[in-house]
Image (cartoon, rainbow, N blue to C red; front, side, top):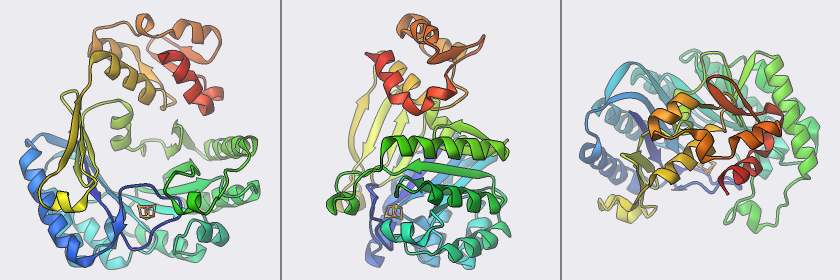
Length: 357
Ligand code: SF4
């Protein structure tokens, strides 16, 4: 089983963010963690856990006492010997908190770097500066050998910003890099302030630059936005893309168990009162198969045909017009896998529309 835990508190709100988050408020934290414990105890059935992922929000903005209270909750899980345990952090993480994460078995850290360019960081309303990133990663390397950084590209039209960001990211000598293009979501400061998307062709050029440069430097491009040194791919995220089961605990978290998608409430007062669930949707076989391809084709390895058959008792070729897209060279097949042609993964959404409609 795979476990996601959501900590919604942030000390600062970024201009592009549409995640479930609220300003850090000491008075809510304790009650929230109590409620989280109740939710876990009520729903978790002692399954063997292969991965825990604590995300947010900014889990590490909790004070040291609350952070320890949160980490203690993970002792409730029956962990597999080789479990992955990831925690998201901002660059401002201090050494005491890093040591605490290590003490509780965290073995993968994901840092919200976003950019090394101080002007871009300002637009994104991140509070760190370029120098802070080096200090943070150097400190983390003393305790962890599995470090991811998140980068955002396409904030400005200038491809040199991207080139510099990738150059700086490579210098950190870490083993996982996630690169997301900026999406201006509704109800974000960027949207409200009328910030505009950059030219699509320039964004595509940036994407190609990132892919070429990272793959030349021994990173495997294993999902549209994710690159890892071999054997450092995130097993937690691969589980989502394989459309397998997981628990999501906490405000706004989503679980997928027994073909039912459970959406937790996004209302913190309700959550603290123990009214965790907002709704649950039973997914029929057609929806599950569609999800399987929408998620599975995000991975460059693609979809394993035998696994698809064993899961749904259906031949994938008979459900979706795969052959036609193979003829057009949009999809590529071999004995075991069907995958999106690497050249076209950037237009995955258009390929999916053709497969599903
Ligand atoms: S991007 Fe992360 S740190 Fe920034 S406001 Fe959103 S959840 Fe908080």
